[in-house]
Image (tube, rainbow, N blue to C red; front, top):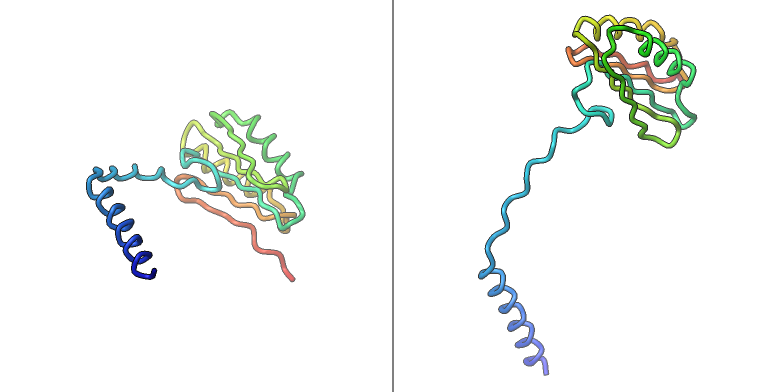
Length: 137
């Protein structure tokens, strides 16, 4: 009885091996796209991320920042990407020039309170970056 079971297992494995040997190999998959930064594609001149410490984002600061961006003539476009359940959002700001991105970075940086409700991260495509410090315990 054991010999029959063993022989059937060997025959089944041999049939599988023979079938895969006759099939053409699959082409390799295409390379993955570049990873997004904060959930937004890397074409942003200025990226602003509003995070949460399990109690929501700093909504008043977000409102002030968005009002500044909408009114500024250096902003060519603004995309919003929601990515969390507590209001977490990433703002992708396209600007008319790199100088506009750097100027807006400084303007937004001054709007961030010393201890916001949630973490706020700023970054430009030219390399400027700022993160709010973690909360004190």
